[in-house]
Amino acid sequence: MGIIMLKFLFIVVTLPLLPACEKAPENQQEISPSVSASTQTPPQSKRWYTSEQLAKGYQLFQANCAACHQPDASGTKEWNKPMADGKYPPPPLNGTAHTWHHSMRVLRRVVNKGGVKLGGWMPAFENQLNNQEIDAVLAWVQSHWSDEIYQVWLSRN
Image (tube, rainbow, N blue to C red; front, side, top):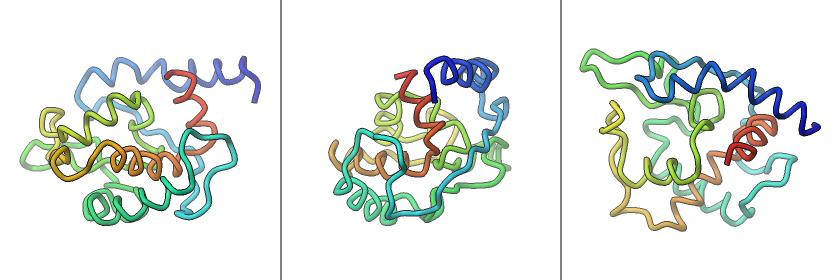
């Protein structure tokens, strides 16, 4: 995909969503790219992570994240609607929600500090996972993003 097409895709897909990242999640639009459900095969485009990180990330995700975000990272269907307690349920991490809008720095911070300050109830993992383990989890999560979504994320970061 050419750089002009990527820029166009970025503008068309993300411009309406940028203000939503500043607001509560109910104002965000859901993105539905084609997503590979495979946990073993890396996507076709060149990514920042290794196959070793993917394997480790899979194990760590299943042990620490799958109970809430689902074993395939599909999250909750109505992730952008608050529950009865006012908190937001676990979003999909597979590229169909808002995760890909955020830089690696922000993604790491959310895993480290949790999602309570963001209106959710995700616990902080800073005392359970080290930086390399968090990167491995994020690698596995990103392996579920389509090449198009990953390229837009990469171009933004």
